[in-house]
Image (cartoon, rainbow, N blue to C red; front, side, top):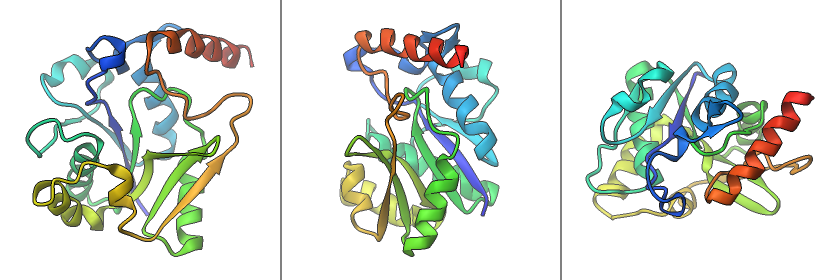
Length: 203
């Protein structure tokens, strides 16, 4: 298995007042750098999914892949962009993760893969605190044309709905000492993220 990690950084960040949420600083580094550092050891390669001028992400040294679906089609379009990039690279799978989740677990791919194989599923999805995080998932690149059809011809926009079309397995992570899928949605979340990052640095 070869897996490309695609970091979904194309959100509109309405609750943060707009702009590029993954570029917001936490403990001296952008949120996106935290995500990259978590995923890099787990993936054969990484790419950033974002629209607009890719130069704003040049400091991270990663390929930036834009949505191929017109309009703001949401995370599914980012997953498709990642699948297309992975297909060109000859990779078999894509791990998707939002660009605002700085504390992703170090065993993310290992556990998703093991659960997917154990259940005979097509897609494995992360969960914590009784909540499924559909944007954090392991996808086979072989589903890309079905995803393209769902987005373009059917107008599908819900990640959970598309996942529900296939055999899938949900993998639960403990949320102690913090939720590894904590995401920075609102300005008040920044303070929590900084506190977690400081606690981690002490550990």
